[in-house]
Every structure is written in structure tokens, then in C-alpha cells.
Image 1: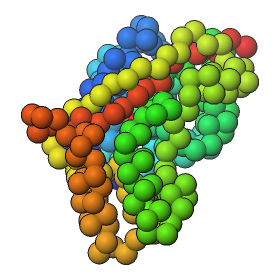
Image 2: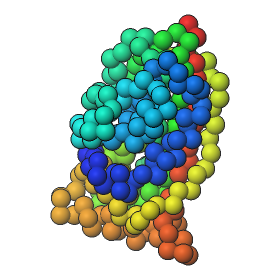
Image 3: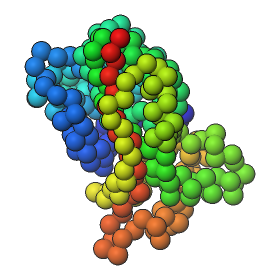
Length: 249
Ligand code: BEZ
């Protein structure tokens, strides 16, 4: 996958990601004396909230740039591939917000989370569900097909249906306490070009550098009728999958 992260741009244009993620924290219970792995911690905005609540937190992310930014906030963060986690019964909790959909091998992720948890540990997560940002996926795919490319090769996201993900969790041994899918139309703080430039890079990977901006602008034009409100706000068609599962053995 072709995706790089700029922590400054991310903090400016995607702060809503960690703001929404704060809703997950109430599912974790008390922080007292408990350790937590933040899987896909990014530049550490939500990890900082966990620290302030008293969690003993470690963050991991596959992006060196994001981990460097997290370290400057005093967070204990490491560069680590979410599909190859290297922990052994280390944490009371694993929490992941808006990161699991970037990992296209969910079985590998769930193996690593299982191994990272102590017996009795909990795993709380939120990710894009089946149908998430469907308008964006459709339009990017249409433009790529018109240019003769196979869009499946460049789609960086894994958005599972609830029953599919439930089955994977159960197959790995987790007990599912709750799992739900819900729509959350999400108003962007600025123009959708900023969002596309941060999140949709992978779709432009077969293009010359000079054509990438043109691709985003074409997407913007075609998305207007679906995502631009009468008030001039961009509202993206997010659909979330949220769950809490337990490792009991
Ligand atoms: C999400 O959080 O669902 C998401 C964010 C950016 C791109 C795709 C999905």
C-alpha cells in the first residue's frame, strides 16, 4: 500500500478522528493499575487522553512519522506492524480506533491482539464497516477504471460486515460482549481535497506525480452531488463497526 502520513496535516484536518474515538474509552472500564495497548496510535491524540485518564499506555503504529510525533508528546510509542504484533500476554486491554481498516489481513491482526492480551483481557475497537466511505470508493474506482487500471489493486481499506468480523473474532477465541454497526455521516472541518490528500493516496499510486492532484480534483467534482451539503459543508458517509470482546482463556 502506498500511504504516508504527515502528523501536522493529520492533526489539522483529521482531529475529528480522535475526538470520535473518545467515545470508545468509556467501554474500557477503570484505568487504575491497568495496562493498555493503543493499536494504530497515529500521532497520539487519543493516546494522550488515555494517559491523562491514568492508563499505563503503549502505542504502536506502522508509520515512523506518526510514532515520532507521538514520542514528542511523552507517549511510549513504537513502530510496529499491526499484522505482526510482538507482545506476549502483556496488556490488560487493547484499544484500536480508526486503524484496523488499514490492515488487510485481519486474521494476523487478531492473532497478535490475542497474544498481546493477558487472560481476562479486553479488546475494544472501532473501524470502518462494510459500506464505509462508499461514495469515495466508488468514484475513485470509476476514475481508475476509466484510465484502464484495476481499482481493487489500489483500494487500501478493509471494511468488514458485522457478521464477517464477528466470525473472525470468535474463530480466534474471543468472546463477543458487544458488536454493532452504525452510520455516522461525518462533517469535515474543511475541503474534501484535504481529506482525499491525507487518506486516499493509495488510489493515486499508479499515476504520475503530476497527475495525482488532477485525480483528487476530479474526485472532488464527482463527489459534490453526494457529499457537499446545501450549506457548503462536506459530509462523508462514514459507517462504523464498534465492538468489545474478551480473552477468557
Ligand atoms: C475511517 O475512519 O473510517 C476512514 C478514514 C479514512 C479513510 C477511510 C476510512
